[in-house]
Length: 131
Image (cartoon, rainbow, N blue to C red; front, side, top):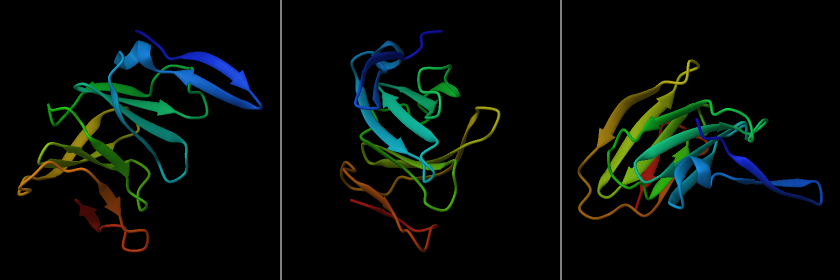
């Protein structure tokens, strides 16, 4: 399995190159509320990265549940593994479970145009705005 590589270490920070995982088509990135998880999307692939070991093995790599090019993704403030994934006029609510599986919880298909932005409410964590 292809893994990310450390591209540079500067000023205490580390730059990780994820192109071996997703090719040159990384379309969206989201960090979980704790900063422990990163969800990267590329083409029709979703990859879950442990940010404590970003150069280590992936927590999960699966085919995109929405089967379309992802434009935006965002983790919920209320749940570490809950994430909204937007592609074209569709938003899919997915959850990463500890064994690395991606579970589809619901989808929202009534949008009349392509979704450009997602925003979870910080206090009412079950509320999601799309635009």
